[in-house]
Image (cartoon, rainbow, N blue to C red):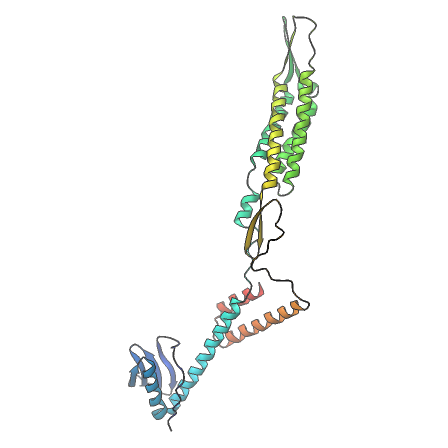
Length: 317
């Protein structure tokens, strides 16, 4: 008896299927230019590689080779199940959460290690104040020669200590990851004190008792004043730069740039709403179910070991 119900074969699972089903020496398959029914290596019947050709091939198999027809129908059913499982796997994979990006993106590293011109200038100004503290602050010129007074013999000790603090604050402001604004502010205060001490000493030089003695400001005192003024300006620039530095917010692969403070209304596109009570248990159950499906697909030969490992890692990430 001929089976008039034709199984659904199109679209073909593969453009070339030399042996789609086999019963003993009889086999059914297809390749260009069409379907064929073979006995061993000998072709018994051939049909066009179209839906009409498939219908004709099925009618011949059903009437003349019923056991081969049963094997073909079983192969079609198994192929359809594998296709459905692959589609389910693709659906599951598309619904998985995106893998988190590394916390330190290229943009974050560029911000973290960028060189602040203000902080770099603070280092140079601090070194200038320190050098000036060691050089002469006053020079007395007489007919018998010149006498110099170094800064370290007076308030130069104070400016030298302040210069060391200024250099330290500049280093922390330049390379530190946190509180750059605070270190720049400390540098501004230190340079202000160093400048005040230098200007005070410059204005309080002793007036000579005779016209034969000329008292002049030494090179060291001038360097301290200049270094303090430059350092104060540089520290203010560093504070402004630190307050305006961009903050990169990376969350689930989305980044945003703000000035100084995180935006209150920043909502990532793939950020999920708060989970209701018990949502964690449901999520764990869902992951377990998906792992079970993956294991079944691997056992059926639908997934290779590499594909199974990749999908499992994505589920557990």
